Length: 223
Image 1 (cartoon, rainbow, N blue to C red):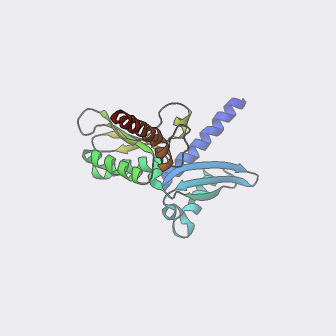
Image 2: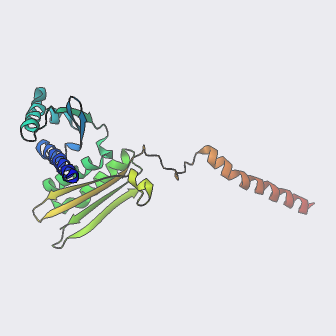
Image 3: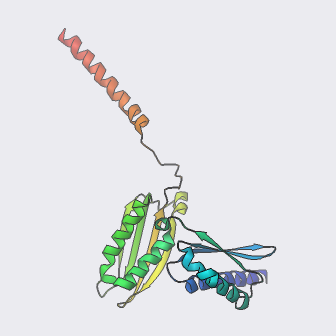
């Protein structure tokens, strides 16, 4: 019985998150987090466009709060907005933006869209990024395309630090799947090596010593 209740509870949470994402629109919401407090439910919406999510004088938030109370039977939902300062480093925002661009400009320009977005991610400071597209691009048969740049962990514990997201673009030829993976510049990697002037000086020390010894040998031989 407890397992069934837990499954039903998680299902309700998922439905709330999906409703908020679909209601506010693709490309506006990255994550929806639900926290439970003694005074009610706290719903935290991470977005790069807080003005569009809140609406004029908080109209959209008020409507959304009413729906959460009446439709999903939440007791006292309180919605908070968490602004994303660098949307280029958020995998979900990037995936949604690629999907919207494919729907707007068509799948024939998928390479231009992917390369431009990849460059924006790298220019924002990401250590590495990968964009995968799968669908009818541009031929009749669906095939995968991969666009990548920089350093990206694929296996082991550090791979969990990679921000991953999925999106779907509904184009005229068919559905296109979008997968995005971004390694943030703030992520600490134990095996990363930073080469600065001090490290270069240490590496050059044995070479300088070797040159000095060879010069001394040449002088002795000349004598």
